[in-house]
Length: 113
Length: 114
Image 1: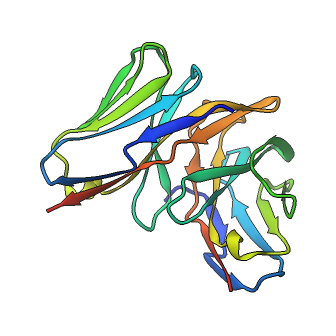
Image 2: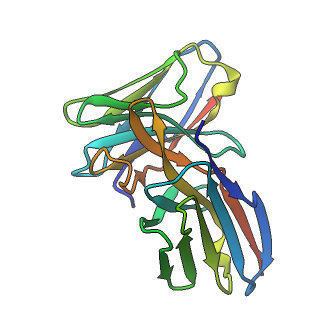
């Protein structure tokens, strides 16, 4: 079936280093969303990408949607301890006659001070 | 604060029992989603309701059922509970039913089966 895969599963970085997580789909996606879940918290919507090759920035976070709309990445520049958490990508996949978000397995980011 | 309210926050019960988890969506949102998150697992989509009607079904067990009421709050019923049902259950809501809607998550209900 349709899958949304995310790598790496875990990433430890020193504060100030950069971080990237990658998301790949087995099928073309109409859009992709990114969420962040802090330890002990709930997922929080970060952004949605819709267009092929789209790049969006939120301060130190850069989100990209691939040209073929089958992959996406989230890059954090100069990580801070506040960036700690699990980052999920999510893309629509077919479920019977409906389409619903399928979340990737997430990348758990640890930032060492 | 996402505006999505889930109760209870914690639930401890025994195998074979039945529990009900409750969710009130964000004001104005018509769609409600239920997810299960087990330890070291991602978010597994269970079911979606839109304006009272079931919209999409995911990996929801037959022992589980849900509904959305006229006031748009939703309940997830889990019966014949097994140890493996221990997990964090999230409710999320969005304005419409389409797959391009940002979802707003509640704080979750942590279910522990003893």
